[in-house]
Image 1 (cartoon, rainbow, N blue to C red):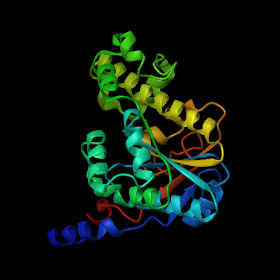
Image 2: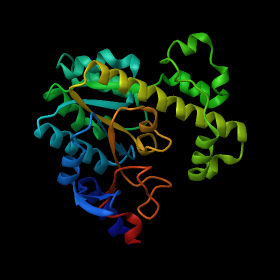
Image 3: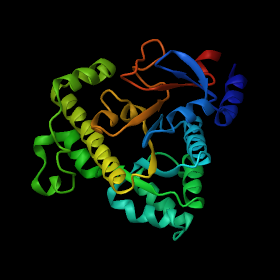
Length: 278
């Protein structure tokens, strides 16, 4: 069994996602069909588990598929704060080195290697595709997570888009509680975590809307964690009237048996799980 697990771990990075569940009619479609079906809207969310190489390969495939259909693209990324936008612009324009850009990435997204997103970054640079920094300032998010929205000062709020720091609803708290029951031990701590997550959703939604207003001809592919890319309780619900489609991998609380169109349009079918082999 030990040698089987080692072999599986060596094979996993090369596994590709080839099909998805179309949630509306519960049918299975191939990735090419899925890309065709999402190509008519200005915003396409492609969620991920951050450490999954297969999800990043699928994201790149969506980008390539949309470009092949003649779409003018932008890539919105949770992985960067707004303060890094100039560095992203320089990268997409070919004005900076990989070494310098990797340092910008590592300053924003500290816990995962650059190599996970490297093919996406290179594709953006080689095709002059803008990358848009979506995330809220880390120091503000961390403060809210520890002390709540009420702790924000006027200086903190100036770093956020108007309305991004609005209170979370009881419905949102109930939604998060149903999926992440482990966080319930400390009621105040749980609320603060929810406020921090919703703050990030609202900041990212605001930046997507602002970019679309300036560049309505572009399709933005949004790369974000599955919890943020999910419609219910995520970024899409904060977009107002801006049309979107969602592609998600299985994430906590979201599986084929329970999924609905309130969650996503497509649920990726992953090749297999380690658990299937044990």
